[in-house]
Length: 309
Image 1 (cartoon, rainbow, N blue to C red):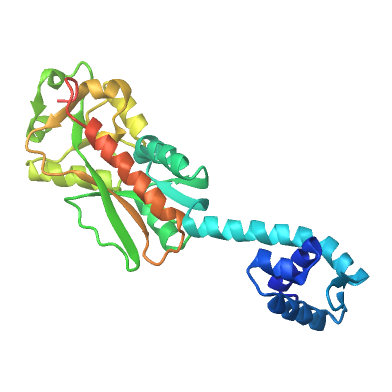
Image 2: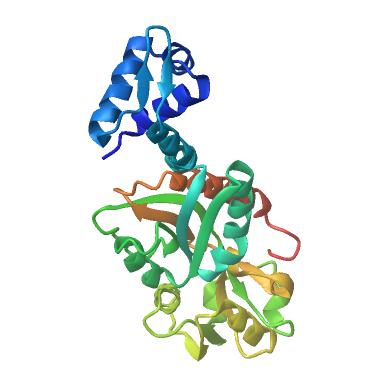
């Protein structure tokens, strides 16, 4: 197999016409250049230079190899640059999964910052519920996922997973525009015992949380409709079909006008970036930093407003 160092040396000797000048350009002595050319001749079985007392003359074989090695060296240089960029996280692909609310709020701002830092980076996005994303991280189908955990619900991370908390989402009760509670500054969960509820599907974290909170408040929620799609839930509330418990990142548009804080709310939704502890994707470090900045910016914008009370 040809040695790339010997190929570079051959190219430089052909360019400069001298072992000494080639050595000067490459940082070698003339003797070291001569040894490398001899090694290349030995590995190819070719005589590449006719050596005189004061000069060297390339043979036809050297000229033919030289014509081909320029393209090879360009490819090697490009490969070396690519390897350095991948090692530095300047280039490459990071595969990211996220639950829908974070996909629509945190992810775009993280992508914008990553594009400033590493314009050549590529991010492939996957959307899904937290329970669906974790197996994809464990199987290496995803490099990182944004998932949520309600702090009243127990959660243990699988072995080999590193989880970094990015932020906490407050929970609000969303009421229809014509509902009497829309005029209240704050609402107690117990006051909503007689309301119809819209929540997640059976077995979902959303549904389990509502059952737990209502039980602590002394009643069982009367569930009228179920959907894991927050946009659908908010439209159902606006249509007067019931009330719903909605986390901050999922609140959008007109829904914020009828979202009310819950008095003594004992629960928040914690947002985590999870990845395999053993991952070697250098670009992931930059993306995690971009996510942290996006979450910090979101926390600054998460102050209570006149509408969300």
